[in-house]
Figure 1 (cartoon, helix red, strand yellow):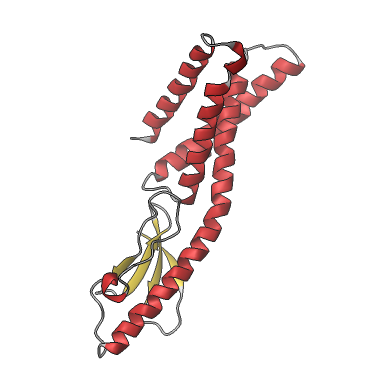
Figure 2: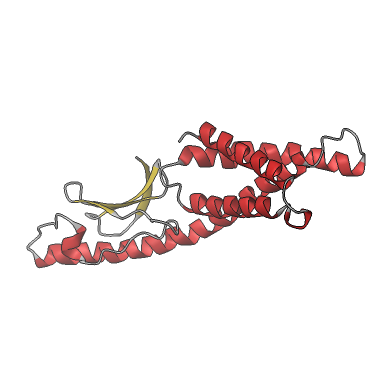
Amino acid sequence: MSAASLGCLLLATFFGLELLATRIPKRVRLLPLALFALALGVGAVELARYDHGHGDWVLWIAFVFAPVIVIFGGASAGVRKWYGWPDFGPIPGRLAAVAGTLLLGVLVGTQIKASDVELTRARGETLRRAVLAWRDAHAGAWPTTLAEVAPDVPTTRLGGFAPPPFVYDATKRELRFPMSTDLDARNDLTTKDSKWERVRK
């Protein structure tokens, strides 16, 4: 699904929940919208940690459209409350609040990602040592897969849902893990000192 399609789907869901709110008891009227905002926030945390192949979602929805909605929706709610005109009703303010929850999720996820990357590098260092030890024990031959080195190959820590695996290339003699759709962290196993460098895919 493209970012534009997802954005339209999210807006349609928002307005559908707004329509639903007019048909349910007043005391629980905002509950569906609050649950929707919470789901968006949790999803934003996950995609900020690792985009799972949907970097366009993060770019266009989280970094372009959500801030625009927060700015203009929040401004509309502010002038409605403090000046009374122009009065566009409560919907722009609610839309800004939902988009703000998404932005908060991105902020939290970005902070978590820094520790995710550090922990993933630590796991990568363990794999690097295991690969080099296997090579030394087999007269300089390189393993063809990581399963030969470690039967229980650790996963990366990028994201809480289906984190991507480490990628080992026996011909290039390198170890990688994806940091995003377009960016990998690469470790050259032939060098004496371990160093992780960011490379484009």
